[in-house]
Image: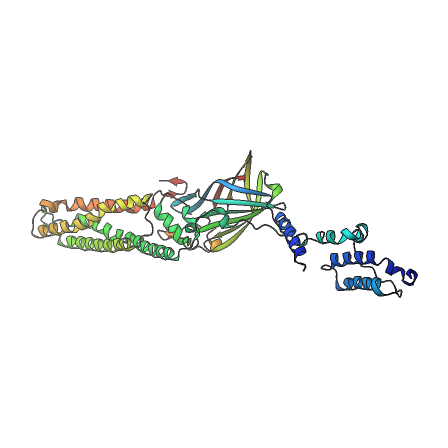
Length: 182
Length: 268
């Protein structure tokens, strides 16, 4: 008997619901260069990937960002070393490195970004607080650079060795990204 | 006749309309006590001619019951019911991997590949260790090669030095065979062409591989000639040249997978 009013209510409520979950602004990762650095007493190696994908979603003054990159996309210039890296980091079981962070929308144009990062890698999650990134805004593109101070122990990765000498625990990842609103 | 009816009965239609509006409007949100009060008002307006004490007034917005005309009150009050979304706003979900357009082949775990990678790495680690260990008998064979040929001028046979050289050479070849077997039997995990130092490392197999076969054959021929008191001659005389080429290729293969070498701030 009272179906009609309830249907009317439902029809009114659904658009209203959609309105409140509406995204204020989206961001897309244009281009990126991620570089890990590995140190060994007789080796210094950089592994580079340009294959990162990223998206940001803003609502209620906060923006959530996600950056993901396939582990096997990192190229150190030596295919044997890359395969060893893939094996050590269990890159076939956990093929994606993902980084999540949240920023206040008001800070998106600041020259320096202070980020709390959640990094998922090799089946483990590590949190890095107050990682500083530098930003240059040119038109609509936001060029961001910085370094994530990651270590092997953060992700419970056993240090690979060369000539029985293990590599250093520190594996900083240099970030160079360009974002733009989509 | 009209005077027989109490005043509340005369205003009955308006009171009922207003009360109905209030009732419908707050049916869902009012507490049970508030609803009971509204019911009591309606009931008293409809049928109770005896004046009752005033019931406590619920906290009801006045405009819905008083400012709207009774005819329009009911439908409009239904539309102005509180929207659930205002009470429980939802946040949009943060971006997920599926939003990034990564293909399933990129995101799907591959335990089989991981197992092959583990085995590949395990076998190449043994390959690496055996390869380094092989350097020891190889270096020994190189050093003792100076004492292997007979010294015909001084009339020395050098049989002991030759035997030591043969022993170290045989150990080198055996160790080399074991070393190579781990690289050959390691599962292939990528069809992509090799890049970097490993490329040169693999190319050098075509030099030190045949060299490791030829060297002991030529060495055996030279050994026989020397034991017969002859000067090493013919194809056997190439033993030393083949052996040194093999050792050079082997050493270069080791350096190739190590290159470039950094020591402190120096880069080689």
